[in-house]
Image 1 (cartoon, helix red, strand yellow):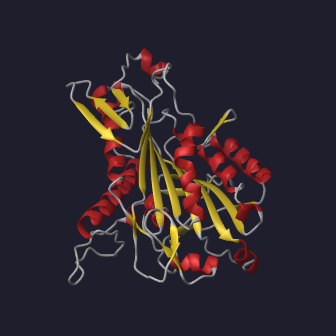
Image 2: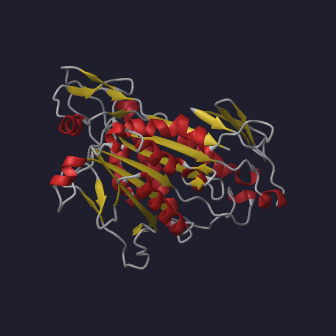
Image 3: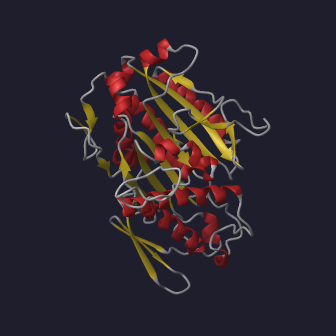
Length: 387
């Protein structure tokens, strides 16, 4: 709903939600733009049933847990202006826990996790001015931040020196969440924050005491930096209009460019390509270069946006007409993600984990037994909006 500050500034609602269709009305011209998403939640009308975090987890977060247990790297982005509920959706409060505590709770209800077959590690870090800071270690003043380096096999990048806490019981999860809550107050409003959960084969962790093995799946919950509340000038396009682009704006642009390139690859070639150069395969269809290295944000999330991954986007929106243009830009980006299809390529990881050479991915979001080795395309991006 409208915040007290927006009400005092004369803000009026410019969003109409009808089922999964969300319509934005231009306050200057009266023109309407309609966007059809997987889910839309309206909290403007107190007489209507609104979606709490439990419903959002049931419809979105439970799919992330299932995807991770099946071997997919999973990433959920919370995108929108500041003070629209991004952090509340991910963290929540005691009476209405967010996606992070509900995800941990769901993981520790799985037999493989409870029995110790799967080891769970969690980390919490921020990206501010293209520098990575480990929030749990409170190294806000270390020069240059943590280094992000590509893995030897080229499958993605890792953050060196990141503190990863092993979670063995729900008590450990509660301690981790308590640390997160204590550290949230020190996070800059202009920073992207990452909550990362990694799942390992417990036997691999026990064998590799000195060097941690590669996880068979990751869950990233990313709170993208939003526009700061400020002047409320309609001409600026959003509350707190800035005269120039910030590093956070540039990283969001790099993220949008990656999404656009993935979608264009899908349209041109029928499959996602992570080729290092734009080229046309002999006798094949043209491929578009995907600029994962355009920003630290996309470098960190490369393995969760490309092959062997599932991506979700939650847009938290202010219905105020003062932020109309920013809301339109948010919608354009998340609708673009719906055009992306991913190619499942985690046979090697799952074979090593499950010890069966005949276990391969199947269409429809699941796994099946087969002796076929053909790659199968996965339609794996989801978009959601909450006003």
